[in-house]
Image 1 (tube, rainbow, N blue to C red):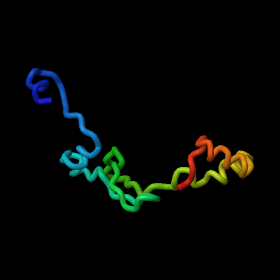
Image 2: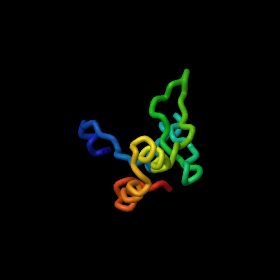
Image 3: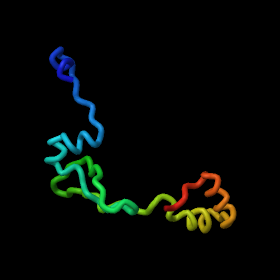
Image 4: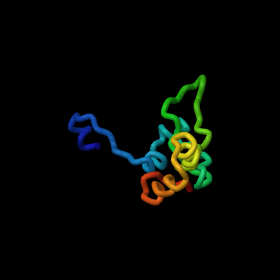
Amino acid sequence: MMALQQAGIAAGVVQNVEDQMLHDRQLAARGFFEEIDHVKKGKVVATGIALGLTGTPGRTTGTRAAIGQDNAYVFGELLGLSSEELQDYLNAGVIETAG
């Protein structure tokens, strides 16, 4: 990055999320990373809302349902699959299992 910038080429460091969380002072000052409640993992640190609105600052209140949590309702009641059909799809890996 420094060599490119010294040569007059616009360049910036490429960061992964861990780099940003540990080393990006601007993101830290903005409070970009949030601690939220995850449905399976408990408290986790996650990226926050990218827009920094002062009048109406947003926050992530937590994760929602786990993947597959509503399978029985969606595939059974809404789409009419029998419990046997749903189980066949779950066993085949076509539908993600809850949990």
